[in-house]
Image (cartoon, rainbow, N blue to C red; front, top):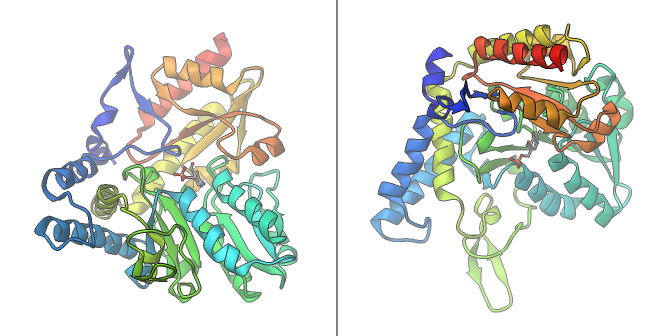
Amino acid sequence: MKNMRKDFPILNQKVGDKPLIYFDTAATSQRPQQVIDALSSFYTDSNANIHRGIHMLSERATELYETAREKIANFIGAADSCEVVFTRGATEGINIVAETWGMENLKAGDEILVSEMEHHANLLPWQRLVQRTGAILKFIPVTPGGTLAMDKLDELITPRTKLVAVTHASNVLGTHVDVKTIAKKAHAVGARILVDAAQSIPHEKIDVQDLDCDFLAFSGHKMLGPTGIGILYIKKELHKALPPYQVGGGIVYEVDFNDAQWLEVPQRLEAGTPAIAQAVGLGAAVDYMNERVNFDELKKHEAALTTRAIEGLAPLPKVRLFGPLEDLKKSGHLVNFVVEGMHAHDVAEYLNCNGIAVRAGHHCAQPLAKKLGVPASVRASFHGYNTLDEVDSFVTAMTGLVTEG
Ligand code: PLP
């Protein structure tokens, strides 16, 4: 992990006279030099529009773009690279499923099951879909311990369930969700499952065939890649029935004045000029993870950082921690807390004065924040480039805040 940190030049700077401590990976990760170089090299040597050109640069750019798709397909264990659709990010991927598969397949009385710990990105598209179709939205409860009430699944998943859309890891509580079990139960009643992997794929190896999910969405920028690019995995057996999301160039093989014939997925869902350099950059992030990150070691390191943070914060007066703390100590990558009597933004501002970047707010999961009874909380989130010394500085700063005020 020490070797990994050297690859992230942005971390070698100061905030005032304090070294920067970046604990905001759950919002966006940093990028290694290898990804920055891949972006720069694309624009320096290979930039052109893809697919439609017959010249050398266009062919090169097309090859780089399609090679990135293959790298990502291999990385997530997809059976075929055509199952990998480039999107702007997790949000767009989930909206695509709601607007295409959802609008084609949902009718009044059908049920969509989500959890109470979803990011707005995996809640609002379903709210809108049920408003349009007359379908019903149901929720898997969050327990007081911060896990999903898996024992409620058998009563919540019924023959009326058409889709279960659930996060793989909570961006607020850090909870890891057993989506494989949920997939089995969903499939047993003929329902489909969508996994929001935005917070899991930066930290663990995902195999879509092992999870047996039908859709899986994530963002490049949280997994060491560029902004403006993400992935929607769609199981091949669902491709035929999917209409386009947006229409325009790049998705048709025949157009008449009044009609058009669509190409297959993934092209059918990638209208217009895509984020070519960013896709290539995401391919470079995947190369980086394959070559430089041992996921078992990453998990151990992040769990050690999380444990140190929990054990440092838990004894402090006025600090209240959220989430399944014992699970997080084994395999977490974030801590979430409030300081009683202090607004989360004030805590974050104080930490910023100490060089420490954390996030404060409802973390785009307002219904969960309301359920927890705190309008805003503070989240410190980690990756392989963080160190135990940084966590110690954070705990020292927090101790100063709650003891000296
Ligand atoms: N889902 C989860 C669990 C997230 O944490 C986020 C971002 O924080 C998203 C979805 C949305 O990701 P993006 O804003 O990159 O589309």
